[in-house]
Amino acid sequence: MNGPADSNDDRGGRMHPAIQEITDRLAERSRASRAAYLARLDAEAEAARERGPARGHLGCANLAHGFAAAGRDKPDLMANVKPGVAIVSSYNDMLSAHQPYETYPPILKAAVRAAGGVAQFAGGVPAMCDGITQGRAGMELSLYSREVIAMATAIALSHDMFDSGLMLGVCDKIVPGLLIGALHFGHLPAVFVPAGPMTSGLPNKVKARTRQLFAEGKVGREELLDAESRSYHSPGTCTFYGTANSNQVMIEVMGLHLPGTTFVNPRTELREALTKAAGRRAVEITVHGGEYTPVGRVVDEKAIVNACVALLATGGSTNHTMHLVAIAAAAGIELLWDDLAALSKVVPLLTRMYPNGQADVNHFQAAGGMQVLIGDLLDAGLLHADVLTVAGHGLDHYRSAPVLKDGELLWEERTEGSTDPDVLRPVSEAFSPDGGIHMLDGNLGRAVSKVSAVKPEHLVVEAPAKVFDDQLELLRAFEAGELDGQDFVAVIRYQGPSANGMPELHKLTPPLAVLLDRGQRVAIVTDGRMSGASGKVPAAIHLSPEAAQGGPIALVRDGDPIRLDSTAGTLELLVPAEELAARTPQGAPLTDAQWVGTGRELFAAFRRTAGPAERGAGIFALNGHAESLRAGA
Image 1 (spheres, one colour):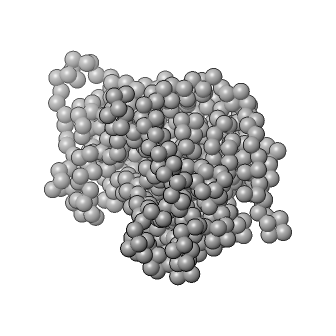
Image 2: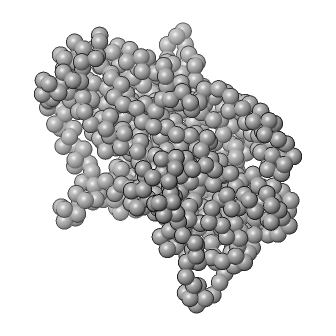
Image 3: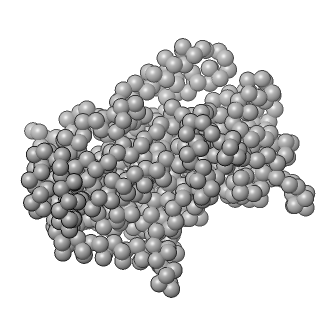
C-alpha cells in the first residue's frame, strides 16, 4: 500500500491515565470471553495458512457451484492459487447513502484482480432508512434489522470461498450489522468501504426552522417537502451528524477504513481511487499475504475504547451506546455503559456539527476532518496509538489524508490544525470539557442523555409527568393544544427492544422544540430511542429496564414530579418509595396478535429474545462466553 502502510511509528502522547484505567478494566472484565474468541480465531487462521486459499478444501461439486457463473475469473477460481475476496454490499437505489454502491463491484473486482486476488459478490444485506420510516410502523423493525444484517453477512461468508471481505455499508444499523457479522468470521480480514456524504444542501438551521413552522401550522406540506428535498438532494449520506456519519467516524478510528476515506464525496476521482485502493488492500492483508490483518484482531479492547472516545469527542449518535456494546460483544469484549460514563468525564467535545451546531460533515472535512481530529486526540493521549489497522500497525497512519497527484493516490500527513474553530477544535480549546453523551442513573433506571445540543439552562428539568404509551398520543395532544402553557416531562413508554423494537421517536422533536421556544420547560423520558438527530430538547432515552420488562417507568402516573439532571447524571421519580412499592404497572405493550402489519409479525421472536438497551438491545450472546464457561473459566 502506497502511503500509510509504509509507516510504523506510534507518536501519540502519553496515555491519559483514566483512558488507560478504563481500557485495563475492560480487558480484565473480558479476559475469559476474549481469550476464547481469539483461540477460535487463531485456530481458524492456522488452518487457513496450511490449506491455502479457503476454497481449496471444498469438494469438487461444492467448488464447481462456487465458480459456475464466474466468467473471466473462473480459471483463477479453479486454479486455487489466488486469494478470494468477498464483496458484501448494502446497495439499493432507493436510499441515497447506498445508491453509489451500484457501481462498486466491477471497480473492486478489477482492483482485486490487479492485486493478485479474485473477488466475488458474496451477498447483499438489507438497508432500511430511518429517515423514511420515522413515526411509522416500519421504524419498529429498524433496530432488529441490525441483527438481520449480521446474520445476512454471516450467510454471505458461510460458503468458505473467501480469504477476506470488502464490506460496503454506511448508515444506522447497516455498519454495526456488517461488523458484527464479520467478527463472527474473525480470522478473515475485513476492509470497510464507505460511499461518502452528499454535497451540502439547504443549511440545517433553515431545515430545522421549517420543520418547527410546519409543526406550528405556519407552513404547509409543499413548503416542508421543498425544504427537505433541498436538504436531502443527491446520492450520498445525509450530511447532518447522525448515526450514519457517527458510524463512519468510529469505523475510521477503529482502523477499518483506509485513512481519510470517510467523508470524501461520491462520484469524485478521489472517491473512486480510494475504492480501488480498498480492493487492493483486501488482498494484501489476507493470511496468504505479508500483512495478515484479521478483523478479530483489529477490533480489540483498545479499538473499542478508541471508538467510544471518538463518539464522545464528536457528540455523536446515542444509538452507538447500544451498537458499540453489541459490536464489542461480537469480539468477545464486555463493554458496559459504566465505561462510556467514565470516558465521558474525561473526553472533551471537539466538534460542532448539526444537530450540535450549524455545520455539516462537509464543513468538518474542510476544516481538517478525521486527520486533525485523530491527530489531536492522539497527541492528548486520549486515543490508543498502538493498535492494528487495515492500513498497518499504529493509528498514526490516520494522521494522513489521501490526495491524487498526477492520477496517483498518495497519503500525506496533515501537520496543520483545524482551519475552522467553529466546527473543529483542538483538545486545548474544546467546546466542552466532557463528552456530548451523559449516562443517567436513578430510581427510574439507567438512561442516556445527549447534551451536546442542549443549552445549559435546559440541562436540569423538574416538572410533572405527562404519560403516553405511544408517540402518536403525544403528537395528538400537541395538535389539540393540550400541552400549551405548561411545564412537563413527557414519558413515552412501551417503546423498548422487547416491546416494539425500540423505534426512534425523532418526530417528537419538532413539536416539543416549539414548546421549548415558547418558554415552557419540557423534557422527554423514554425507553425508546431518539437517534443521532436528537436536538435541543433535553431527553433521557434508552431507559433500562424498559416498561415491558417491569421497569419503574411503568409505574409513573400523570402529575408525578420527575427530575432530569444531565449535569449530575441523575434521573429521579420524586415519589416516596413506599408509594411506588404499592403501585402496579399501568399500560402494556402490544401483544403479538396486535403487533402486525408492515411485516412486524415476522419479528415476534426478536421481541421475545431482545436484550436490554444497556446490553446492546440485541439477540446475540457475548461471543466466546459459552466457550469460556465450558472451559471452566
